[in-house]
Amino acid sequence: MMEFKYAIVDNIDYTLEEQGNQFTALRKIKWGDSDKEYLEIRRWRNTPDGGEQAAKGCTFMTDEGPANCINAMIELGYGNTKEIITKLQQRHDFRKSLNSVLGKDDELFDEEVGTLEDDFYDPKSLIGI
Image (cartoon, rainbow, N blue to C red; front, top):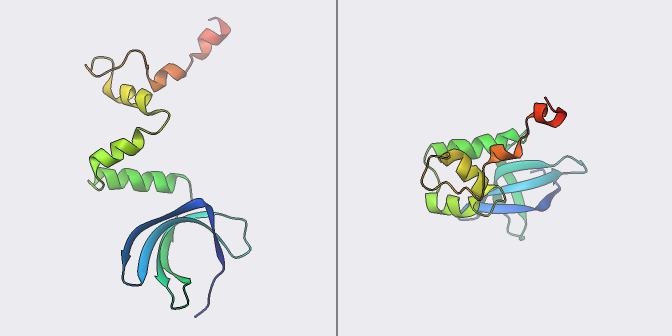
């Protein structure tokens, strides 16, 4: 079987599941001598010599692909809600995003934080119209 040279990029290397000598991983990879980087979900096999052999997988072609994937998974009920919220809370725009979703009439709305929409300016106000 032909073996391909690859490099993991930006330390994006998450094992999603394992069974026997196989595992499924989310990785950002450069294949061969190419400069192109790909975000992939792929099954890998551990080889007897301690290496890894790539199996079938999915390569995202655009930046929208992973975003659409996570949105679909959440919509379909995958993931632990508490864990998802905990991870989202670490993002810099979490509180403003939460306020944008809740709306100003919600009792949990935080006036001090504002919303994502507060970051947008009306071009008319910039030119004095």
